[in-house]
Image (cartoon, rainbow, N blue to C red; front, side, top):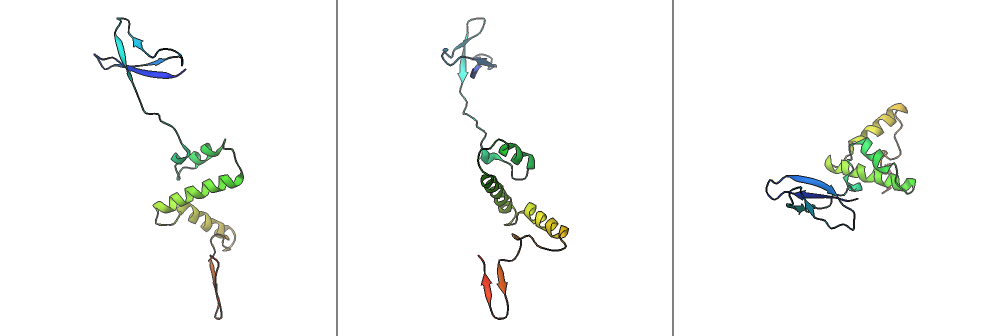
Length: 128
């Protein structure tokens, strides 16, 4: 049953009233005074409102998400780019992950953290 808000025209007091979809949306108080209906813009929670800094927000928003693992990785990548956008092009969480990865593996870098070019005295290759 949808909830509607009505306002007393004299006192500006507001009350929330539930109506069936087929009911006429008018509210009268015990004295017979008709209250004015208050119209509000609808407020929806969308996926775009995920906080890129909050792990719990990401987990909660993707817990019941239908799709593939690739969709989940795409969403994670979007949030990473949002963090990077706010920090001069570098995602601090990604940077911290790469640092810990290298530390745990005796200095071996993650494949995403390696240089995108190879250069020797004879040749220079750009992998981008």
